Figure 1: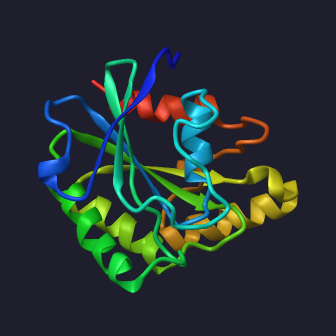
Figure 2: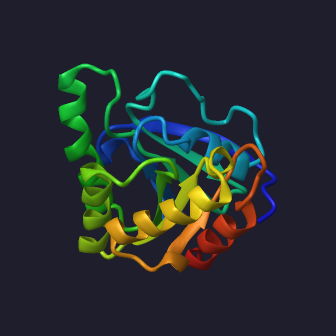
Amino acid sequence: MHVKTATFIKSGTKPSHYPEGDQPEIAFAGRSNVGKSSLINVLVNRKSLVRTSSTPGRTQLINFFDVNGTFTLVDLPGYGFAKVPLAVKKEWGPMMETYLSRRPNLKGVVLIIDVRRTPGEEDLQMLSWLRAYGITPIIVITKCDKVSKNERAKQLEAISGVLGVARGELCCFSALSREGVEGVWARIEALLP
């Protein structure tokens, strides 16, 4: 996909905050510090459309971005070990589940996993929600430049086993080398009308 424009629309925490209209949406989800912001920025070819941070858990709202005036990219809050107040953490699950279950124009979710980690309980919960609501997951394995080829092969085997998906369903990505950009876009475009 050739991205001509990518602009921030708005942020929200509940359905009344979501943008109006029926433009198709592709959401991005993953643990805090998994490289979600970097993945989005590389995909839309912008340095800082989505702010990156060395502090996990910066995204605490659902952020909506218009891409080419044809679809909306949705940045969901990172989950996991983020250093945020417990009260905020408790809101995340219901906020994400509400979005996933009630958004008719949601076409797919890019589920992001760090190649150096084994998927945790939250990753499995997210995949379970996606399956329950009939939402197609696009599983992207980030930070692939940070491990050797042998280690990558071992990790991909472990990740596919834990998630219960075929190895071919995993899309490898590196923000540094831009490996996987075309593959991720191909999977996203397949879900857009």
